[in-house]
Image 1 (tube, rainbow, N blue to C red):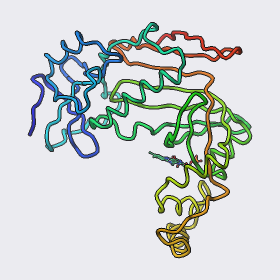
Image 2 (cartoon, rainbow, N blue to C red):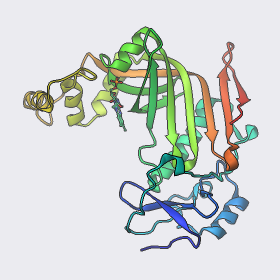
Image 3 (cartoon, rainbow, N blue to C red):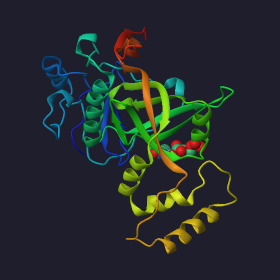
Image 4 (cartoon, rainbow, N blue to C red):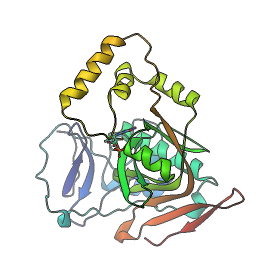
Length: 294
Ligand SMILES: Cc1cc2nc3c(=O)[nH]c(=O)nc-3n(C[C@H](O)[C@H](O)[C@H](O)COP(=O)(O)O)c2cc1C
């Protein structure tokens, strides 16, 4: 067993059951990531909850992390009304924001990626994509962000899937990055466009062989009779395209790029007085930032 906090802690474990964060249950305060470098306050926290040295040399990202070795997982609280985490992160201030939301996203994404290295977050590029059909009925699902730049956020999927069919009739979409261990979320609204075939093909070539076959085998979102149907389809494809051979890019598969219209950066703070700063695209191509009440 590694080091543990001096205070009463509920230990948060990652998928390997390593303890990655401490939630103090005596006063309901969770030690979380600061937003930007804040050496003096970081030092203050470190003296309360001594942490392991961060793997990468980025002092602003040294969280209060307990890296105890494998130990028993504490009894879970199963009543959601009893589940309370209180955030004590450093604030997100207008003056610290990047001029462009994608640059601000890059900062936070980099920090989330570092948190993943430290075991605090699993798949920081997982995001929830919400779409709606022509009648306004919404649907959501998780996908993986595969690229981002000044033009937007890219994910890949089946163009016959429910999400793709909805985007075909209603290109408005919302994205949500749920970086809970950092007491952060990023919420994007925008418009979806398919990526070009060259861009799709370039990404498809980087996928593992099995994932390439999977893109062919699955008629995503359609009802199938059994698991066997899927496995048989995959086996036939792997006979046709053995490992090492080139799998063609499925015509029904490709990317969507969500061009942002608003991007909200949400930082959880004490007493539920969270910071919410939202970039809004102006018609002239500039961005306005507004603060939202939590
Ligand atoms: C962590 C995670 C990552 C996923 N990534 C993708 C992805 O990148 N593309 C995709 O089409 N589906 C992905 N899925 C599956 C989707 O959540 C969803 O089941 C699928 O796209 C069908 O959605 P739809 O029927 O609403 O269109 C992922 C699921 C999880 C849990």
